[in-house]
Image 1 (tube, rainbow, N blue to C red):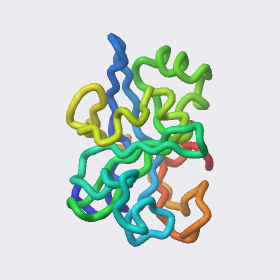
Image 2: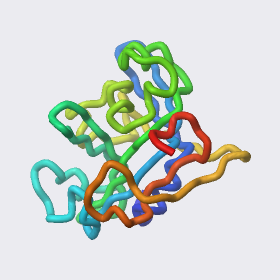
Image 3: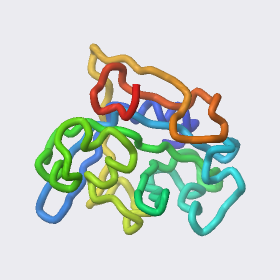
Length: 182
């Protein structure tokens, strides 16, 4: 995952997140991402290292979790080399296994359970306790995967930000119902 953040953002599409919640196993397939790095005005790392964002300056393969709007958690996969602040926001995922647990955690059924970054965190019970978590280890593992033969990737500008809005750093699986917004 030490590749440039945009390359990792695209490569993460189709990869799997495996989450253990108590005795339950939840498995989702990543279908939407956004890339952020320290040269990007919209990134948490743009102004340098802080206690909040220091995980993003660490080695690749760890989880950066932050709290936003005073009510939601969002999570990112740290990329690049240690000392460089970059990560990929996980925006949407398709449930594969443990759908009942996902819907119970969200109180929502169908695509609305995981089609947004805060929804995904709530569905997988991801909060600040997992900030800095090694994604090679339980209870949350990132597993390899890929696009299906019939799938293609759409690149677009990111959504939900007010700075660097012209950068084409959002990636999603075309036509997947678990993408947050078309």
